Amino acid sequence: MSTDTTPSTGAERLQGRLGPVAVVFMVVAAAAPLTVIGGNLPLAFGMGNGAGAPIGFVIASLVLLLFSIGFVAMTPYVPEAGAFFSYVTLGLGRRLGTGVAAVALIAYTAIQVGIYGYIGWAIGDTVAFYGGPDLPWPLYAFATLAIVAVLGYRHIELSAKVLGVALALEIGIVALLDLVIVADPGPAGLTLTSFDPATFTQGAVGISVLFALTGFIGFEATAVFRDEARDPERTIPRATYAAVLIIGGFYALTCWAFVVAIGPDQVVEVAQRTLDGEGNMLLDTTDDNLGRLGRDIVNVLLLTSLFACVLSFHNVIARYQFALAGKGLLPQRLAEVHATHRSPAFSSIVQTVTAAVIVGVLAVLGVDPLVGVFGSMAGVATVGMVLLMLTTSVAVLVFFARNREHSGGRLWQTRIAPAVACVGLLGSLWLVLSNFTLVTGGSATVSTVLAAIPFAGLLAGTAVGGRLR
Image 1: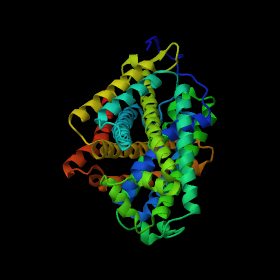
Image 2: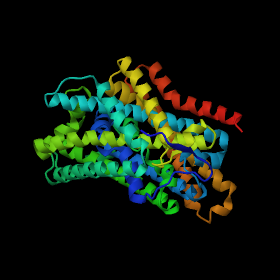
Image 3: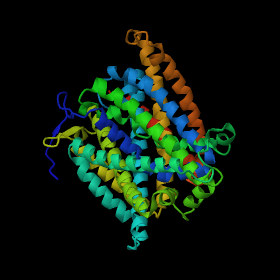
Image 4: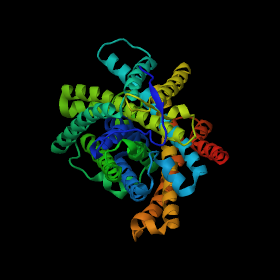
């Protein structure tokens, strides 16, 4: 790799011509449809409220859609990339904005590390299934990390093309699976039991909401690509709404389709077998409906989905570091732009090293790649994401209260929707924290420490922000 970089100054910014479709590809790829279906659905079914799990995705979609209304309304007045950090800084001040930046880096790093654990396990499982050698998961995780490092170092449009192809293929195969299930439903037929209050209120509803929210992590990163968008004022709002609607609708529909395929009375048992390592809900259901060839295709696309997810988060974290360095909150070297690739190249290298160190430590400690790495890190990331969106919604309310001339009579967009979003996010945060021990599978002490990491990041970042000029 060439390290020819130039520092980012007032005129030196990331450049690109990404349209709404390309930005949505980047964001939805981070949401990783097949990854969520293969990993989150069994957890929501088996540990949550069983056949009522689709409602978890509906609730999460509504809350995030309300959040997006205020987020988009404030976007024209945030003339820089940085997503949550930029919004909170403008609305609530630099000190709290710095705290939010710390939480964002923690949340994105956590979910990325979790995905490295998942993809290491998934590749190893696939190789073993087809008769290959049984190798440790960290070997596959580090091989993936190396490829991500190369793509993340180069211009964003290369990553967008790679993610676009992977995303189109995985959405296509899942859409086909959903259609086949609806055309030839399982033992209970086209049942709507999932939407019966008696069904979705049973069990741990919070678990379903938690893993639904986890599936959305990264959707707000539309704003991180502001400098590389063709027309930020139009591209970012369109991409944000599209990302929420596509992710939410796709997950809720597919979750319901799996209930239809398996049957509401059997779905918990099937999901539990997956969690116990005795089956694979995604691949087994695909085999039943699309045959062995369909199963093989989905298996391959699951791996590309995981790769697309981890690449997208790599790009997001690198740009967060880049934006923070440009503000003087991180070493200035991270704000360098590669002279040829026009990418945050040094920030990308640092992000690669950070991920490698954390994955290496977890590997040395012998942490289980699914429950220990993916499950726990997804929980930390979800707490961080909800905390970020809650703070941002408060920032939107404060910003428009202080700048009434920008409201333009838009009471719904600038006051009501953000306020309702705050209530919904507070409720979501309570659901997540009250069920956190189920997510980590560890003791109350371990779960408390993990859940406290984003809050500690917020406090530490705010303290540091108060000392900076």
